[in-house]
Length: 458
Image 1 (cartoon, one colour):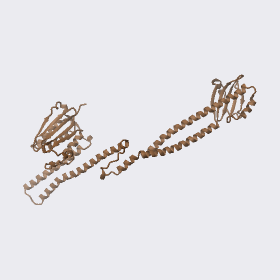
Image 2 (cartoon, rainbow, N blue to C red; image 1 turned 135 degrees about the vertical axis):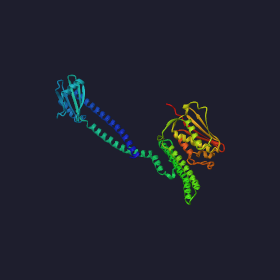
Image 3 (cartoon, helix red, strand yellow; image 1 turned 45 degrees about the vertical axis):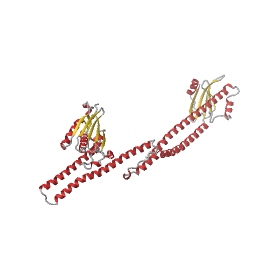
Image 4 (cartoon, rainbow, N blue to C red; image 1 turned 180 degrees about the vertical axis):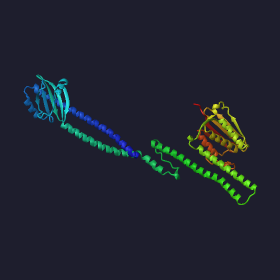
């Protein structure tokens, strides 16, 4: 069911309930007022007849019957019944004995002075009257034809008003729902027009204040993320294909050349060494791509543990110097490192070690043989590692792009690399809710600051 239809039904149901309760209240109030008014008329009639019979000597029972028969103010189907002190009927206009009066009612009147009850279709009032010469019990009964007709007419009017009002409310509710959800319909139409070719398009946010505007803003935010992810994926696929194609092309070419004719053992060895070098390069690219995918995955799929960050620094230094003995890496601890617990980190040890190795390797690679300094700094919230080199630096316009996959600064094209390492570092940092900052000057060197939240014992 559409929301607009549901809103229309709900709105109509609420108003119908309110109208029904209101009309029932009016009807019940009117019914009680009619009954009270009619009982009062019956009571007055009973007292008047009793007074005429008991207190006026000139009026006897036969005369009273003639007076009542010709009385234009008599009620419809009026019946008057009078009992004396011995509960003997002494006067009655109920010739057909329609009204059934039990002795119980008579005794009850003597105790309570007055009672009211109904005998369908009659309404009956009993009164105890004390005259000058007698004490009698008077019953007056009649049918309220005019009152019942008024109630019937009131039921018809209320029913018609209810049905007409309900129809008007339904139409008004439908119109209200359509107008209220019109901005939503506009958003749906705009969303349906957005595809791969125009991910840059955005939904109109309207007045920017109501819930629909908030929904549009949220969707635009999500759309922006999708657009960024799509562009990143597109760029990643293009660059990855290019980076993987290059070593594969070289390997294919070398093998084709060696198969063209017979070679000497030295020539075979030389070509195999070139092929091996390209395979290692290809293997390195694959490993970095796998690390990038792992760092971009769901955090719940990664195992975490508590470890010391300084241990990883020493391990990364040893690993790099074994791989490239020409690298000079000096690790220094800041004065803020005064507590072992400040160096405890909760995270994935392998991923953070990979980030440290990449930052160290980049600093050494672009330092032009100058020593690289790594400074460890601690606070109550984070542990910071400064990777400082005195190398070629990074151009200012390239600083905001260096964490993009496969991006390489213009002045770094002569250095071996694939532009994946810093992307891996950024993903790992985000995964651990950390922060990576960089400052650089061309020809002066660069400084990368990796911040990771410390582990706090709970």
